[in-house]
Image 1 (cartoon, rainbow, N blue to C red):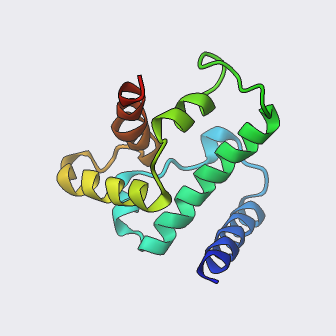
Image 2: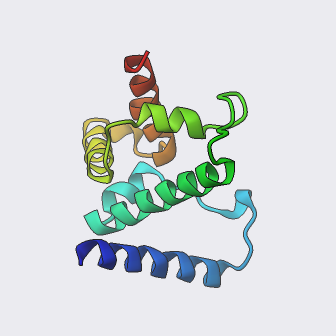
Length: 126
């Protein structure tokens, strides 16, 4: 039931954003930073991470069993680098990182995920 509620919340958030913004170019979409992250509820943080996970899964599904090389897409590296993580471990990791680095709250969340979770995960998986 909780999963269904989170999925419904995520869908509602996506529909609201799509309806309110129409078609947006990449330079029109605001980058979510640690400032917004730290001000958000735990539920909203999960919705953000679900959005990233859904984008990952859409691209992975598009490629099917023929995943692109590391040079063609971030998808293979994200998958290997975040292996073993859950939405909760990523959320908690971001909470801890921004709390420990209050002078870096302007850093985009996706950048923090990449440099603080994906890249270290890739080094461990070698």
